Length: 97
Image (cartoon, rainbow, N blue to C red; front, side, top):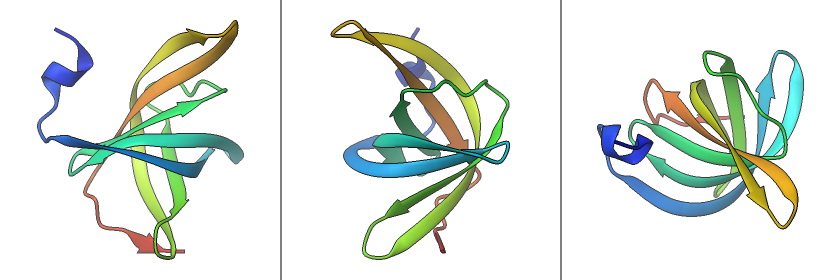
């Protein structure tokens, strides 16, 4: 069973630039899917599972979500390492930043 089989809610593909704040460090990422239970991102930096994060993005205004990294996988693309992460959000209520 892979991570998609364990989801409680459907995810919807997207491609939004985002900034993840973890341990006072800002990390550039691309949000690749989102749903009621969380989001998926790809970044050049890994964030350990269990880390609490803030995810900021622009979608008809600037929004911030609170979440917790659930899993991280390494992805190799054209000789470069990226990290695919699943981030659980308590709910998808967006906070305007």
